[in-house]
Image 1 (cartoon, one colour):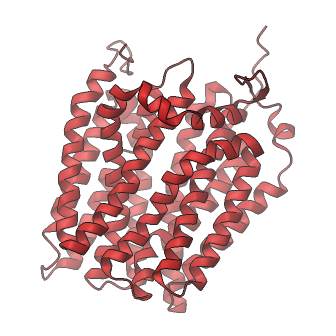
Image 2: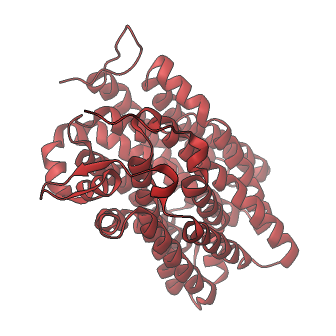
Image 3: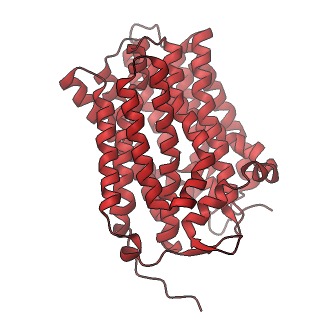
Length: 427
C-alpha cells in the first residue's frame, strides 16, 4: 500500500534549497559580467577576454559528466557544500591571478563547481519534494537563480564605485559561497525536517534516495543514451543547443562590447544588473505562456528576439550613440531571454521517457550545455580573426536558424493536446 503523502509546503524547503541557491547565484551574478573586464585589465586582448569568460560554460559542460557520480556518492547536501568550497578555492585563484591564464583556470573551476551545485540542488528537490509539488518547486528554484543573477551585478556595481577596483566582485562571490555553505552545514539533517527521503531502487538492488539515484542514472551511459535518442537530440536537441548558445553568447558578448566601447566597470555591472531584473521579472510569464498556449509560443519568440538582438547590436559599434544602442539592445535581449525562461527544462521533461527519465535528461542537459560552451568560444575566435561586430552578427544568424529548427520540430515531437493545451509526446 502506498504510504500517505506527508504534509508539505514550499516554504519548508526555503532554507535548505532556496536560500543556498540564492546566495550562490548572487555570487555568480556578481562576477560574470566583470570577467572580461578583469581579464582585459590583466593584459588580455578582447578575444582572449572572451575566451576566459567562456571558461565558465566550458567548466559546466565538463562538470556535467562527473557531477552525477559525485552527488550519488556523497549525497545532495554534501555535494552542495563541497561545490561551495571548490568555488571559494576558484575565487582565491582569480583574486591572486597574475595573468589571464591563471584567471582562466579559476573561472573554469567556478564552472565545475556550478555543475555540481546545480545537479545537487535538483537531486535534493527530487528526494524531498513530493511529486505533486515538484514542478512548482523547480519553477521557483529557477526564479530564485535568476533573482541572484540580477542582485549580484548591483552589489558589484555599488562596491566597485566605492572601492574603485573590480577585484571586490570576487570577494562578494567568496562571502556568498561561505554563507551558502554555512546555511547547509548548520541546518539539521533534512530527514528530521522533511521526513524520510523518497526512495528509489538502483539497478544493483540497493536502495537510495530518489535524488541520488536520479544523479547516478543521469551520468551513467551518457553517450549510449545520446545514441539511443539520436533522432530527437540531433533535431530538437540541436535547437536546444542553439538556445544555450544564444544565452551564453549574450552573457559573454555584452560585457565584451562594454569594454570595446569604453563603458566603465560599475556602469557595465549596473546595466547588466538592470537587464537581469527584466529577465527575472518575466520567468512566471514564460511559464504561463507555455502552459496555456504551448511550448512553441515561448521558445520561438525568445529565439527570434535573441537572434534579432545580436544582429542589431552588430551594426551599432561605431555609431555616435553606441552607448545608448548598447543599453537598448541589452534590455531587448533581456526581454527575449526572459520570455524563454524554463524552456530547456520544460522541453526536456516533456520529451523524457516516463519510465526512466534521468538518462535522457542527462543527455539533454549535455546537449544544451554543449551549445552554451561552444558559443563563447566562437565569439572569441571570430573576434580575434575579424571583429566583435561580426561575431555578434554571426550569433544572430545562428539564433534565427535555431528559431527555424524549433518551429519545425517542437510541433513534430510535442504536438499539443487540444483538450488541455499541454504537449502530448509523440511516439
